[in-house]
Length: 377
Ligand SMILES: Cc1ncc(COP(=O)(O)O)c(C=O)c1O
Image (tube, rainbow, N blue to C red; front, top):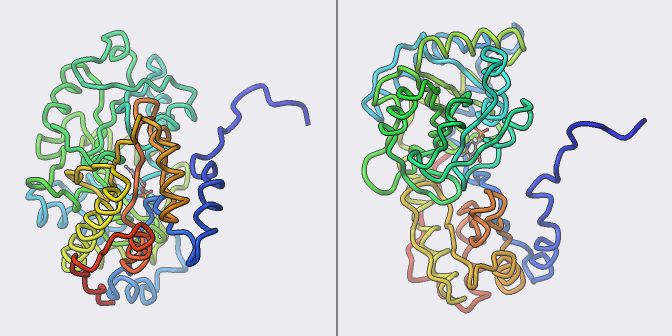
């Protein structure tokens, strides 16, 4: 085979953590991996039962989602966030990462004169990767006001993420929707952490109307179902219809049993209310752990990560200390863009006893903080 002339996938961020992992593994009790935001707590039993009992294995599932799936997703938005969307404007995705990574390609097919994806300068890496995979320009922005008009004129879409990964910030989604309408740019709002909003009420962009916007939601974080791969998008009728037609042609389908299980997950809030307490307790333990290294880290406004300022801006240095002294594997902030290079992201995704082990390694007593009760399964 000759040398490739085009795209060569860059190293996957988390594959760059091997050295941190071996440092942490060397401690008795092994590594406490807080690098990837993968939930560790059990999903509700009612979901697992629905998955097993759906009888939906034989036939092809609808790409856009079954009527019960779409109705359950719309019902969840209404019940939890007070927004009413037409279930016909809800469309399923196979978890949201594939949608995030694929949408620039589909938008570009429709509007070939545009070639730019705008995304927050410190953010989930798939926004930029989606642009790259579509052969588009990935252009980070610091604030809506700071976006170069030459970039907005070329933009296929603008991403917002609220609460944000990695820093947990909340954004003014109505302002983003207004910006998009004023500039003729679709605004895509990734709201997968919406249930884990700690400051004020949860926010969804569709509260500002559906014109020109999409809200993108996932069950991965809400219901500890990252292994099931279920999410949806909703919003602007024209965008939803276009994208769901393209995705039907391409064969994107959430498996039938997963769609049935998702209906059960969207219908249950008790497990989410419990999970919120679990994350808050863990975030507090992790802040104590950082304090033992003289790092003062604020609690996030949302999501389940600490975004820790590294002493002297040396994120790899802090990540190495955390690995060597606490046995904790974390993600250096450069994974989320050059503007994040002075921070470390720490995900609250290990059971309490593993976090307590890490805290004890630094001489922190975690006993003062009450343990969350294990989720009922
Ligand atoms: C901001 C953000 N969006 C999307 C995703 C993808 O989630 P999923 O594909 O499991 O729905 C993640 C996962 O970490 C995320 O942090």
